[in-house]
Each structure stands twice: as C-alpha cells, then as structure tokens.
Length: 542
Image (cartoon, one colour):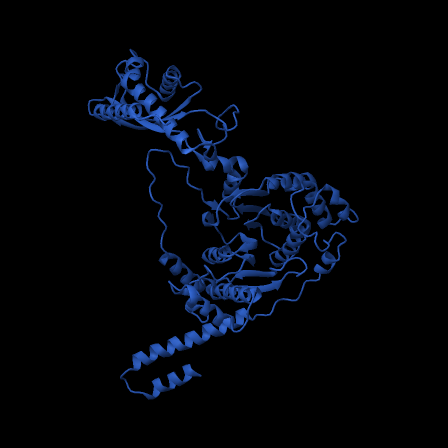
C-alpha cells in the first residue's frame, strides 16, 4: 500500500524531486517484496510425512527410551534378524562394526530414504561433515536397489576420519562387495571443496555456520543440496548476500552489531517466539529464502521427532534455463566482491606442511579419480606431514669429454648420502631432483639441484625410527610426531651436511665441477660458525 501511494505521488508530482521519489518507491517496493518472500519461506508448510516412515518407526529394533545413544554391537544383530530387507542387512553390518549408536542408524536411514526419493537419478553425492559416512553408504545401496541403470558414487568429507569409519567400511564391503570403489572418504575442510552442479551436497546435522556455508557453496555452483541444519544460533550468523537487504534479515547483515543491540534484533526477529525451535524456524527460513532467491525450488520436510529433535530437512534443486542464468548473476557478483583470504608467509627456518588440496566433487572420471587419490587415512596423514629439509645447490658441470664422471642427480644423491653417513647421519636418505639448466655463451653448463635430506626419527615411546611411507609424498613424516625443537635440530644438521657437500666433496668427486655462489657459501659458513660459538658460550641450565 505504501509503495502504491509513493508511486501515485510520483505520477501527480512535478519534475522536481521525481528522481528521489522514484528511487524511494523502488526501495520500498523491493523491501515489501523481500519481506513477503521471507515470511512465506519461514512459514512454508512442510510436506506430509512419507509412508515409508511407518514401517521404520514400527521396526522391532527401534530403540527404547534411554538406549538411543548406545552403540550397536554384534550382540544386537539379533534385533535385525527377523527380516532380510535392505535396512536389516545394513543394520547387521553396522552391528558387526560396533561403530554407531542405534539412533544414528535409524536417523540416517530416514534421511537417505527422503534424499533418494527426491534425487532418484543423482549419480554423485558428497556427504559433508559425514562422521562415519553411513549416509553415503545408504544412498549407494538405495541406488543399487532401484535398478535405474546407472552407477552412483559418493565421497565423504570431514575434518577427521574416525577410526571406526574404517571398521564400518570393512563390514559394509563384506556385506555388499559390489560397492567397492564407489565410496571414498577424504579428510578436508568444507572451504576446500569444489562443488559442481552434477553432485548433490548432503549434510546431516550440519552445525551452525556450516549449514550457511553449504548453502553458499551450493548457490555458487548451482548444485542440488539436501540439508539437515543443526545447532542454530544467532551468535555468528549473518544472512546470505542474496537476502541481506531483505527484512527481517537486513539488520543482521550490519557489521559491529553485538551485545544488547544484537539481543534486541533477535527478540524482534522471533516476533514473540522463544526457545530453540523459534530460533531454528527463523534461521532455516533465511536459508530457504536465500535458496529461493537464487532460483532454487525448495521442499521442506520434517524427519520423525522420535528420531531427532533437529528434524528439518531441506531439499533444494536449482532452476534451469534462462531463470537459472538470471539467478546465477547476483551470486557471481557477490562471490567476486567477497574478500580473498591471504595466508601470511611462514619463515624459512622450518619447512611448512603441504597446503590442503582442493577436493573436486563433480560427477566425472577425473574428479572421482582425484577423490580416490585423496581418500583414506594413509593419504590424510601424508598430507598433514611436514616435508624433510630441502636445500638447493647450483654447480657448473664438469666438461662432457669423458675425463670425469658426469654430475647427475643420482650420482649427487649417492655422494650426499655418503657425506651424511660419515658425519653421523646414519640412515639418512637423500633424494635429488634436477631443476634449471643454464648454458653460458662459451658452452659451459650449470645445473641447479634440489636436495632433500630424509632423516629418520625415533618414534615416541622408544619405538624404532620412523620412515616415510613409500606411497606417501617424498620424505613425508607426520607433523604430530615432531616437536618444534626436533624440526629445528633436523634443519641445522641438514644445513651442515649440505654445506660440507658444497664446500669440498663435489669438487673432489666430480673433477671440473664447481659450486656456484662462493660468496654465499662464505656467508653461510660465517653464520654457521657464529651459531656454534653462541651455542658453546651459552650457560648451562641448572
């Protein structure tokens, strides 16, 4: 009504102030439309309960009060032995693994039924914050039972792979061997995911801001999403840019709103409601509004309250064609305007752990192979590892006339290992990688080499020295097994071996070769002598 009055005054008024009135009318109309959409999203009725939940809730293995969070063990397999349905076979495998509580079994199955019903032809799922990865296993099995003629794959994403996830994997593959190679588990953060429209993002009990992060990830990639939000809170919540200018979400988009002012905003937003359900209703409504503003068709369902108190299930599919292209434009602009995070450079004294890799989620052979290469605990530990000390050297190569042995990477590695062993570095393994080759005008060549000194360290507890796995990246050792002092001492020893290699041994072993940068070597030698004098003159600790 207010927008209509402003428009009427604009038509009846003169030219003076017409531009300002036009802008004001557009703003009021947009605000009214946004508020209407937000109220519709927050009060959208849920879909009726599916028929398949009746048999699930009446199952004889349904948990009794007080037993929901107790882990299922092989002694509970008899609770699921009366029938040979797919659910009962999954339940028996879960019991054999001893990994999951009864509540999670029933809850994951209820979610999997609805997600599969909503996305029956989806070929790729990403189970984010997956825990043990049970939802992904169930989605694979439901696809196998549907006989739709395609092969579904799934990747589980979580910051840490539980040890019991491996036990569950072993039991699931034992019961359903046809799933081998279709399920992977990658330790990664949600910030490192590369979503794709061909992959459904799924998350059960995505805590707090993770739900909003997944909504943003889905919107940016136009990916379908199945989400059960959890841990609703206003403390760190901010609306998605697509609805940040709409009532009632706009006040929360302002920076610096804290304390009493934020509490007042929360009370106004809840409109007299209180408690966790009112907060969840408002925040889930904001997520629905963001998805709808991005051109998604959203269905909101409720899981059985007997299974979980956080029972809202959001199922969203992006629009196609011209509507999808129009909806993607503001998302791309918001993504381009977002600040880029920069990582401060670490000092060169100690090697840094390798940066976390990107995890592609697309339904393509390349992306699936990349996830397979990142999958598993061994690969996760290798990514957390700190590389061994790595130092470069550059040398003029000996003349290529047969009078002297050639200076190659393999020959240099063997020489470096002999130097290390002679100077107390028993068991050190050296790897050398050739880098740039420089040819001077007179024909003389210089080669740069990268030398890695892999020093075995005694494992904690007095065990045998640990050596990097041959399948892991070159020389990788788990960072959690090394202290700061360990790495610093290792770096100093490697530097001493490296300087000895450059100063004397290369010229002796390869006549005609000459290490480049004599001034730098002299400076490094002086710095090393200064450190040794400082260490020798330091007072002993009492």
